[in-house]
Length: 360
Image (cartoon, rainbow, N blue to C red; front, side, top):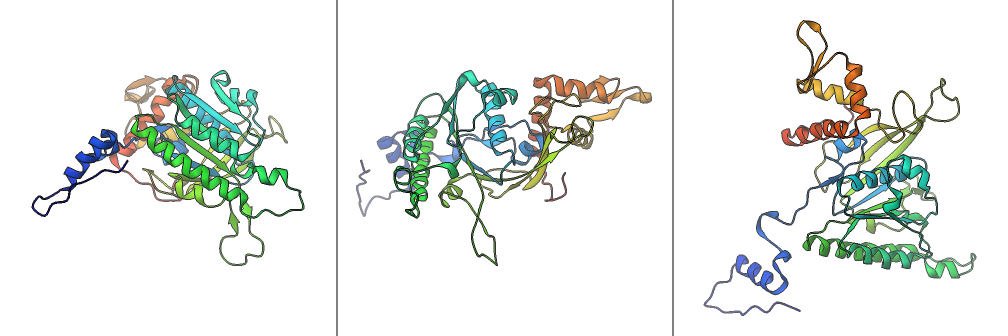
């Protein structure tokens, strides 16, 4: 229903007057002065270097697209974010659209996901996913909605047609509709004081015959890239330890690049190491980030030798050795998360920027 404004040459109408009219017609949530509708919460992943780059994690209430080649930890990062969301907002329900039919509940549990509180949906067609995703975003308890992946979506027309028949742009049309519906649903949810989050996972394809420029492209068209508040590109590399296995990797070293700056970030690229096999006191899904944590605390003056060289004073507490603090940091999850969040909050407050490529 449109807002009707009486026009008069004698009276002067200000933007504030119009805003008041809009609020009276559509409700106060339609708009306000001072950015009161802005939500700045983050969903951490537990990978310190990535969370630091993203100023705390994925922006809550927005959409993020995570893409890259195979075995680059795309799904793992999403599952880690879901696990953290379950801890921080236990009253919310998270949804995982398993389009690729590759969801492994046992592996998800190792990464910290409470699978008993996670809805896993396997849609048959892309159109089903669009309708179900939109409906979920309008529910009161919707948390993270993850789609794995856009590249695997198949339309009804493509499924029913012969493999010999070429259907151009069918997937892009459906994904474009998904993006428009998600955009509206997230906007309406924010007006209602709810902040569901959409995490798209996508893959990399290569254009044929491209000699100049970037040959890479993503299935489903460009619509998700425009909508996404963040675009995160991942590259994966297996890390092996001959003492454990010469074949099975013990960790995944992931290099990331943030390709879109639509929310606060601290740096645009970096790398982290995610443990895939328990070793060196680390559990599956943990990040080997102690050295980075120690360097930041030292730069803050909160990681120093005690008087007369007896132990270490770290954040005001005395430890006999660094190993004692390290053991507590990794084994006490709450304590470790508090340390990580403290560093991220301080970096945000001080507005310190790290030059690209200067941080490992």
